[in-house]
Length: 262
Image 1 (cartoon, one colour):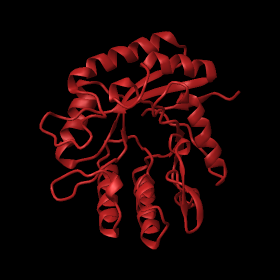
Image 2: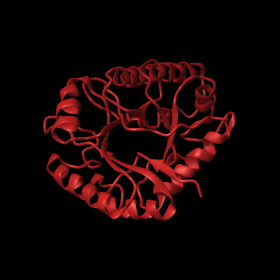
Image 3: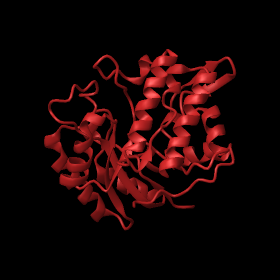
Image 4: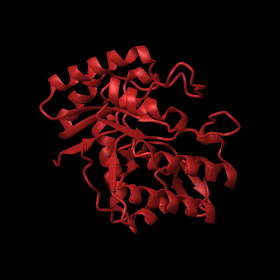
């Protein structure tokens, strides 16, 4: 069996996943793994008005996160890396660079935008129903891409889980995100966890919430660097969902690349 890498892995510390890093590492070893990255949801400073405060670790838990990743490294014979999945807010640019990468020593950061800025708040992508909200979300994602702080873009088509239908505007937003990723030479991710979720009925037929077929048709015809990850929330998913993502990519003739830490 071909060995796979996976750089999108969560742990129990985020509050909505199960298992410690060593549990994921040992399962990955069983299934054939050539590189494993942990990217649990990053903590934010205490003053951050967090709409997701119950689904990420606290700052005080970061040393435990790092300690448990070190334990995982010792349990396997392939490289294991430390990262965080983050939402972009330009107010906290120094936090990503100086704290997550600097003080905590993250080897990579993932841009996984689960919310956007609106009226001084950070509502989740689930409220995106209008073209204006979608455009605001897109602009925030592109701002994060252009910051140069992130190493790949997780589920770049996540907004389709809310928009549901493929329209002229969802196409334009998709093209803009893909183009920004190409300009900054940042990979975009086919997300295996989305493939484990229920499908939806659209005017064009059955679709995944994400990865969304029409988005990846556009991406496959572009010069984007495309990677596949598991987005594992349970140890048994750590490689299996990465295979799911590759199977999906294969439908569009995508030449999947291996993600490498810079």
